[in-house]
Image (tube, rainbow, N blue to C red; front, side, top):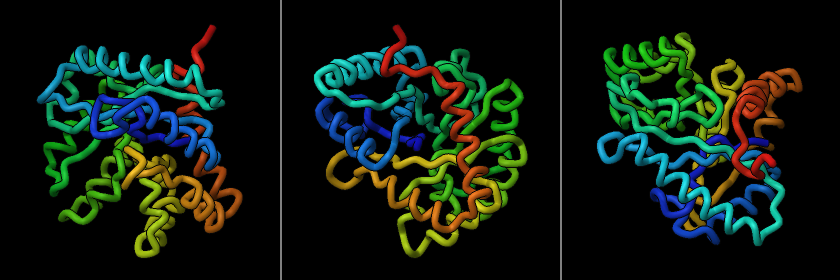
Length: 241
């Protein structure tokens, strides 16, 4: 199984504060059957350049790997970002540094507001440059105005949707979550885990609910995109020899 959205890298954003906490979270994910974890710390263009951010991210990754050396944990790690949207995102010169390493997939966090047509046009330009945006926890934005119609528009353009496991775990939203998956709109899950207090990973229960509600064919279709992303992404741990 694959967790596409985490804040496990230590000391880089509002996620894990130490390498030890990072390892505990990774062990929790492993115990829940997750073998592939994408490390996606926040990136805000208004506070950092892509170059400076990737340098800090690399240091955080090295810190985590050093901590993992003393822990025998059979898990695959991939490096990416959660990029906060702004309309000139497509203009970033070294935007590929923000993508999932080895791919053209870029995880994008949208504003918690009603989206505008100009925002959609920005995505159109990003896709036109050969990148595939993945909307982080897209379900959080549906409460604002006509964002659902904008979500459909972005999917038609080629964007992908990442759903947080919490949306599947909550009794009040899980039926809606399954409807999106059955429509073929969602094929990427993430825990969006941050820490050991209030934002622990809760992957297994969400995955079990999906398996329970989908037919075998629907489930195969659901995981196809996840597998294709993992196959194209560059693994950062264990490192290639």
